[in-house]
Amino acid sequence: MNVAKTERLVLREINSAIDAEFIFALLNSPKFIKYIGDRKVRSVKEASAFIDEKYRQSYIDNGFGLYSVERRSDKIAVGICGLVKRDSLPGPDIGFAFLPEYERMGYGFESASAVLDHARDALGLHEVLAITTQDNVASGMLLEKLGFIDDGTLLNDIHEHLRVFRKDL
Image 1 (cartoon, rainbow, N blue to C red):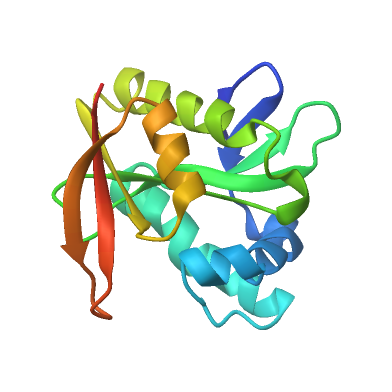
Image 2 (cartoon, rainbow, N blue to C red):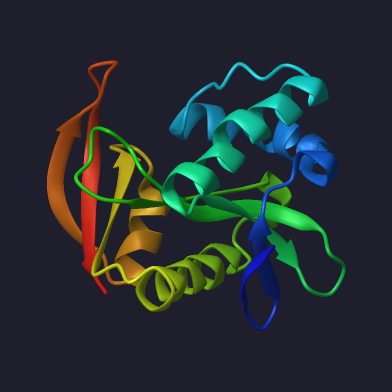
């Protein structure tokens, strides 16, 4: 199911039947592991199960989740972007990750802007949060470009201080 369209992109629900290889590659990319964490997905089969257990379950439980970011021109999945509900935060937060070969092409800003519009218009949210590791400068800059403000830090379950951002919609 498509969630949003932009000039260059389509955001759609992640589907294990068509996205397992892409998700396997993304979850095992160096920056994903460094900044988001090792999900210990070691095969395409495990990626398919991860999609069903995590991404698809979020659509059921929360009415939102992370979405595949696909180029309209060739239907290539370049990354993921969407909303996540974490027990450690008082509201949904935006998340995004892109395959290395598709970074620095404006897809992050374009897809995140569409997610924020969807959060406001379709989901009726008034605020969205975001978190990054302290050393993830690129994500922090993107969040600031999107209009998020720095809202302090949070200690996660592995005793790492994360930057917290907030945006009113």
